[in-house]
Length: 285
Image 1 (tube, rainbow, N blue to C red):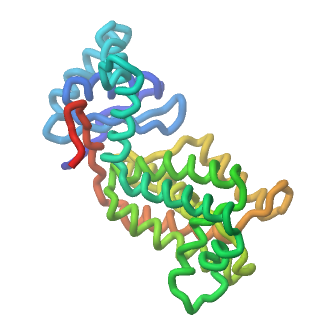
Image 2: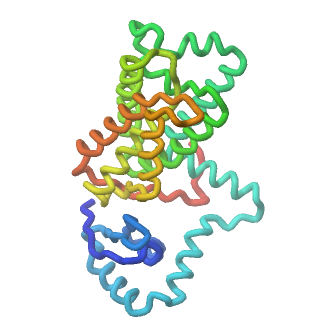
Image 3: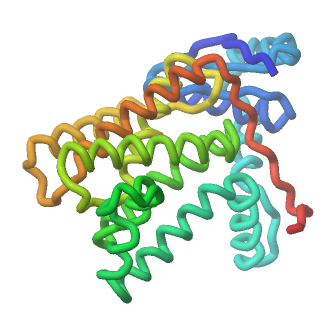
C-alpha cells in the first residue's frame, strides 16, 4: 500500500486527534510526531481524496465534538461487564499483535528466575566465555544482573519491539534482534571482556532504527520523540564517561545503536503496515 504525506500541523495533539478520527471512519491515516509543535499526516493513496476532504472540514472546525467523540471511542476498545474481561482482551490483543515481543519478554523473565536459583550455572551457560560455542554470541542478551536492570530493559523492549513487530512483522523483528545482539555482544567482548549481559544492546538497536526510520521513512509509522532521543544519547555518553552509579556495557550499547541505524537505512524504502485490529469476538486457535 502506497502512503503519502498530505499535511503538516504545528500541533502534535491536533494531528493525533485528526488521525484518530479518520481511523474511526475506517481510513488509513497516521500521524508522525516530530516535536510537540510539529507533526506530519500520512494517508493511503487510494483514500487520499476522501482524507483531504475530511481534513479541510477539520481545519474549519477543529473543535467540533465529532473529533473528541472519535478519540473517546478509540480509547474504549471493549465494552466489558467486568475488569476481568478487559484484562483478558488486552492480553490476547498483545499476544496476537506482537507474539515475538511477548516471547522474548517471558524468556528474559524465566532466565532471571533461573539466575536467582543458580547464578553460577546460568551465567556459565549464557555468557560469552567460550566463543567457539556459537549460541553464546546471542545469549548474553537474556542475562540481567538486577531487578532494575531487567525492568528498564524489558520496558524499552515492550515499547519499541511491539511497535516494530506490528508495523514490519515478527520475521524482521527476529532478524534485527539476532543481528543486533550478535554485533553488540561482539563489540563488548572484543573491546572489554565476556563478563556482561542484558537486552540493552538490542534496545539501543531498536532505538537507532526508530531514530533514523522516523527521518528517512516516516510512513513506516516508527518514530521516537526528540526528548527520548536526547535521553538515550545522554545515557550512552554518561556510560562512556563512567560517571554513573552502575557499570554498563557501553560498547554493546554503541554497537547496537549503529547496527540499528544501519538496519533503518537498509529498509528505508520498505513500507510499514497498519497494525491488525483485534475484535472482541476473535478467539485463540
